[in-house]
Image 1 (spheres, rainbow, N blue to C red):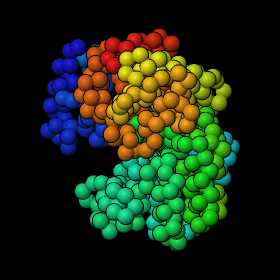
Image 2: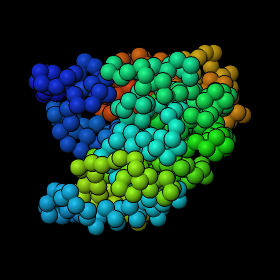
Image 3: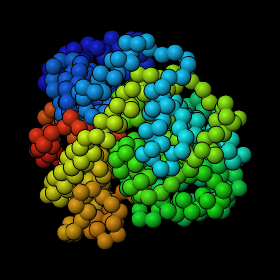
Image 4: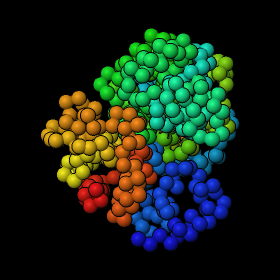
Length: 448
Ligand SMILES: *Cc1c(COP(=O)(O)O)cnc(C)c1O
């Protein structure tokens, strides 16, 4: 594969951008990332004209793939041509808010912002303002954007910043616990219950290999937060309008969080975030309440048009059937290939998300009969159950170097673009086809 142009572009980029990129994960590809020239359905074409089946999809936002359906494209272009933005409210913001409130039962009111990071930052401030408490419980390894409260590592007794530039004293208000671990959560509440403003978690860990919750875990979180007067915040920046269709993951798990953060799909491929939830809590935001929140670009008309038209298109067409069906076929196909060629590895994902985690812990299960057929569900009767990753530490333990340095490049050589490391999620779009699935499964067969 020729990559001359990408190499030259990265050379130029290194002179003027830190690490040569505008977002860290893009540089995870070694020795340098390919630069994208354009998209085409479920594919991207790079600066040297190489074509890849694209399972990265902008890291999540592109539910419909790279070709926007005519009705979406027309609304985006019409809105942009009328003038970029105003600093005064527009009708399309109300339309989009009404759509979300109609489809996501826990959301009575919503505020649009410009990124998932901004959404989780504002949700945390709102939870602290609403409860008058300081501490936020998060899942170890969970990702909620590039913000001070959640860039933490360590454990409940020793939280510390996971990035330079964050005072240790900030991290003291964050309590990281392992996902799927009820005892650790009980302990955190026993120690700090009166000062816990919220538990903040993705309903499925999607930024750490895709880890599915154990049966009953979310019910447990709902109960323990209620018991202590803390809020439950679902970060649905990835799962929102992807898992569980228009009702989001919370409808699939039948859980009502107090607040939900959105991003990615809700803006149809343009910069976006949103915080939604119970009216009584949402009214805490200024100007209704006293938790300050503002943004020059918030509710940007072009973003609102792209997001709303994308979701309307999904509501009126077979989008979720299509992407979930292809996702299912990928996971089933991968489960067979892994059983054959790499029985230690674990296929994860649900709906239109998929991943193979290079689980290291041998020995492999002795029989794979009756394993979860289409992605790990943490089913205790599955022969793989004892080996399947249940939290971020388990995923971190996997063969992350083999995944990125050996396996990823072999997939790229075969024209398949997978997420830049072992941790990020992979997605299916409406633009993908049966042929893309077949080609990808064949490539996995060669590369694994
Ligand atoms: C991507 C992501 C974010 C951050 O969103 P940005 O738009 O990149 O700021 C927050 N939470 C989750 C779960 C995400 O996947």
